[in-house]
Structure formats: structure tokens, C-alpha cells
Amino acid sequence: MLLTLLLLCPLSGMLIVLALPRTAVRAIRAASLLSTGAALIVSLALLRGFQTSQAAMQFHERLSWIPQLNIFYSLGVDGISLPMVLLTALLGFLACLASSSITERRKEYYFLYLLLEVGMLGTFLALDLFLFYVFWEIVLVPMYFLIGIWGGGRREYSAFKFFIYTLAGSLAMLLAILALYFRTRTFDMVQLASMGHTLDLAFQRLLFFAFFLGFAVKVPVFPFHTWLPDAHVDAPTPISVLLAGVLLKMGGYGFFRIAYPILPEGAQWFAGAMAILGMINIVYGAFVAMAQTDFKRLVAYSSVSHMGFVLLGLSSFDREGLNGALLQMFNHGTITGGMFLLVGVLYERTHTRQLDAFGGLGARVPVYAGLLTFFSLASLGLPGLSGFVSEFLSLIGAFGIWVWPTMISVTGIVVAAAYMLRVMQLVLLGALNERWRTMPDITPLEVASLVPLLLVILALGCYPLLMLQIQEGSLQQLLAHVVGR
Image 1 (cartoon, rainbow, N blue to C red):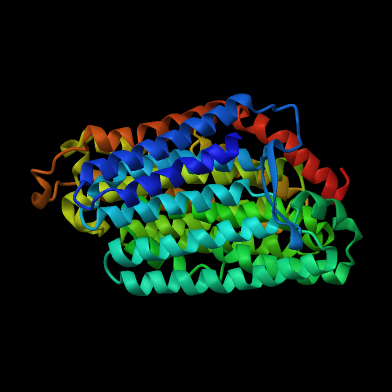
Image 2: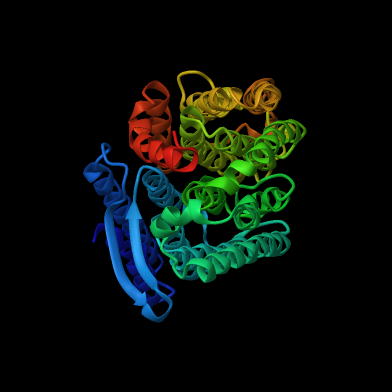
């Protein structure tokens, strides 16, 4: 029952926060930290008990929920979902730690925050399509309010835009789920995968396109990406961390868990389009990021670029490409999560995100400067750090089948180096802006929310087998199922 226990951690925290009086601020924050910390501990227990030699689902839990419709409360993890569960639990705790900057309506904030974590964890654990859709939609509601109430700037507009885009994608996905159910009379993902090759090609193509629309909004795939920069810029820092670190991965995970195994021929039919769209994401996102003057918007567009490597790896139907795509999802979460935390640290002290307003901070705030340099180098894909490994694997996998899209995508890496070096130059080097002469350095609490991410990035950069050995068995099984090798 470890998986149910994992969901109960933030769920119980929600109930405790709900029961506490609004004035018990310290107790509310403590309950939230304890529940997200407990979820992290349970996820580490899953990692400890996970058998890398087994490709099948592990820690499987299955109870009848709505028997009239053949719907089950069915949970499980494998080498595809476990990295996402670990990422969600880690960022969920660290973003909660970074939520000390939230000073208004804290009871409502932490309640919605914990509900968001329940939805995110459930999405990665569900093995029933109906249950998956329930958790998927649970995420939408708290995220809308967290941006719309606690955000800045045009927060209502950004929250509404996020809601409309995501809801439209969800409706396309719901139609595909219902079509699958009426054809097969089951929501069980494992059973549906076993029936995948028996579904006719026209049906698979239609449903894959519908699922693609649902997942593409979340990734996000060009041209469905326009909600992302606005949502990131106006969301509070901890929510930006979860938005980039976890929510974008839900779309990529949907391809791995649902679209590819259940609609294998449809996936192969759409592979060329995935490669082209991945290339566009990488190059377009990088060039638009290069043009940004707002630090947070720059990091948001860099996410569009980095998630393009996930699409490119997925399009390869190759061992290296799929490993690179899944690893890129995890690595992007840790790297970009750290970048958004660092943007938030700077904004709290200066109340501006304009890059040309800074300068010379390297000498004034040396600890912050060191952390920003590390995460910037990780973001541009420096060898020895985790981002390099996953991007390299995605490119190697895709090159064997999509030569020109892969070669063009490499320009995105060059541009990424340019815009991240530009960030370091504008923020840390040059003459010190007199406005920031008394700026305090990063606090121990802020450092504590960044150090775990730093260690993970360094560990996976030096020894990527730590994660690849978890993924390998399940991805090999997926590859054999989809293309027979």
C-alpha cells in the first residue's frame, strides 16, 4: 500500500490545514512541510524497493471502484513513472520550503498547494485511464487559483489563459479516452496496451492525434505554447517551479504511458511530425529566449526549447532516444526548477526581473553568484552536468532516422549557450548597479531549497546510470511492444 500512502501524505496535510484556524500560520506551514516531506520519504522508499531487473509494474494496487463501468482504483510504478514520482515529491517539498515568501491567505495557499501535489502524484501513479483523467483534471483547478490569486502582474489573464488552453487539450483527450472505452470496454492501461496492435490503423491515427492535442498543450508543443510564458511570469516562484518542473512532464509522460503503448501504429505514423515539432520547439524556443529582457520569461522560453528534446527523442523509436527523452524530462525539472528559484531570490530583493537592471552582483552576492553560474551551466548542457547527458542521448537516438531535423536542432544548443552566458554576464559581471550595493546574499533557507537539486544534477551528470538503470527495462519493453525490437 505504499502508493496509496504516498497519495495520503499530501491529502492528510490538506485535511490538517483545513482544520487549523487561519491565524495558526506556523502550524499551517509546518503541516504542509511535514506532509510534503513525508511524501518525499515514501517516494525514496519506493526507489529503495524498486527492482531494476523487472520491466513490469511494481507495487501494484488494484481495487474495484465503479464496477458498472469496469473502472478500478489501480496504481503502479515502473521505470517510466518512478522518475516522475521522485521528481514530483522532491520539487513538491522544495517548492513548499520556498513558499515562505507567501504572506497572504496562507491557509488557502497551502491547501491548494497540497491538492496540486495530490493531482500530480496521482497522474504518474494511475493505471486506469478514468483515474488518470481524474488526477489530470485535479491539477488544473488549484493551479488556476494559485496563479490567479497569489501571482503578480496580469495574474488573472495568465491564469485564465492557462485554464482555457489546458481545458481544451483535456477535452480532446477525454474524447479519445471515451472512444477507446466504447471500442474495448475497459479503462485498464495494461489491458489496453495488450490490445493496441488489434486496433485498426485509421482508429489509431485519429485517437493518437486527439491524445497528441491533450498532451501537446502541457509539454508545451509549438504552437500550443503561448500560455506558458505568461503563466510563468505571473505565477509565484514556488508555483513556477512546479509548473516547469512537473506539469510540463505530464504531457511527455502521457506519450510514454498512454499514446505509445496503446496506439503503437498511430505513434509510428505521427513520428515524423513529432521530430519536426521537436526541432521547432528547440530552435524557436532558444531564439525567442535569446531575445528576452525579463529573466523569468527567458527561463520560460528556455523550457519550450528544452522540452523539444523530449519530442525529438520520442520520435526516434530508438533505445538511446527514448532514454534521452525520459531522462530529459527529469533533468529539465531539476535544472529549470532551480533556475526559477534563483529568479525568485533575485526578484524578492530587487522587485525587478529586467536583466539590464542588474550587473556586478558576482562580487556583492558571491554565494548566489556561484549557484546561478552552476544552474546556468547545467541549463546550457555543460558536459559533466545532467542536462548534457539527456540532450546528447536524444540527439544520438534521433540522428539515425531524422538526420536533418536533428542537425538543425543542434543550433538550439549553441543558442542556449549564448543566452545563458548572456544572463551570467548581465547579472553577475560588469559594474555594480548602485541600487544593489546593500543587497544581502542568499539566505541559508534559500540555499537549502537549491542544494538537493544541485547534488542531483551533479550526480546524474557524472554517473547517469543512476537513473538510466531505472528506466532501461521499462523502455526496452515499450520499444519491443511498439516496434518489435
